[in-house]
Length: 92
Image (cartoon, rainbow, N blue to C red; front, side):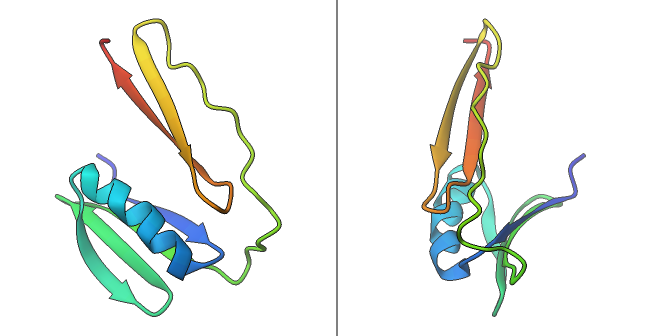
């Protein structure tokens, strides 16, 4: 079972709404809120979006989405910082 995932971002004010809507659509509920971060939870698993001073805005995430296989459908979303999330559905 997945315990938690942490996403470190350069700008929390921009990233929290960009990730929050997706996490809520996936069944997570807002869980914690502090000056440098937010979290969403489903069951015992939670996702943290936290601002990190170690990140620079000029270092975008760079990866290509993968196809997911012949019986899968994959799509991806990219935010303003160039960070991508890939969504894969099986049994299509």
